[in-house]
Length: 406
Image (cartoon, rainbow, N blue to C red):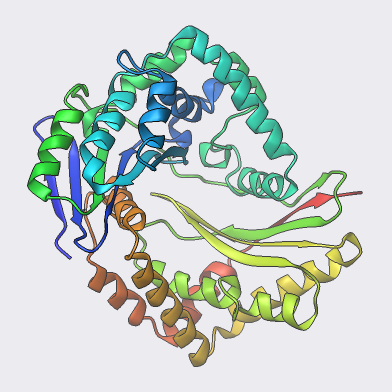
């Protein structure tokens, strides 16, 4: 694999991963600003801006944007996370220049018209309402609020109804002008492309980006809150149990990946085997990790009949405690490493996954870890390593959030 990375004079980073055996290309733009970087009164402004960039530019209407993608069988989308905002487009490889020009246009010179702000405001309020109707989303949202108490990492990236309603056109324009600068962006391209040609095309497509550095003042979270119960008219009780994890670049990150898979990361995990397969107490039960530049989280989710919620909560706690106390078995470590390596290798068949790998790493660390190095890091995890991380992370305290009927 021969990735190419260049940094232009204006500070824009362009990364290319050529794939000779595919006929597609995936182009992504990582903007290094997310919901944790927003002033609280305009929380959700990154997500608001993400929506608005597809409403048009001086050269393209919203319909022009959608038609240019549809007519070649492609797709275009975006998402807002806590530390970055990402825009991406996938097309047949022969249309890579079109994809670059389209993303360069919408990101560099969006219209940000007042009328579009008002119409999209209503769309976002509907999106927030839709999330409120999803009790598992509510449970994860409240969990973040409790885990990162009084900190921007605990805020939902979509903002609140109040902040969305009160964010002005000028707030959005000012946020774009301050943060959407070349030095804070990574353009990642993966697919059947010529690296030299596509780098030149990307430089031309994003030539309108302003120079300058967007100053981010991030502070690490310092406290957590306690358990929380949300009363809601639901058919199931939705549980999220978890605690603080590891930052993105922690040297024990791969050990925690292994521990997470043993706990609830796959069909052979302890949670899935005990709670679903053996006892039939839940249809969905899993564990997951979130990592940020200076913090992290681990969590377990389960949805179950209200009459069994106490039993499921106790079982989850017992499984977590046992893993924290005794660590995984050698067989569990081997299975987890095999899964992590195999899933990673198979993802490399997809241009979108390879584009996301480049953009995510460069946006977070300014470096690319090779495929072989990443595989080796998982392969080096021993049972002793995993046991130590399980004890320190899973045994380090946890909180419980439940959403369901009284």
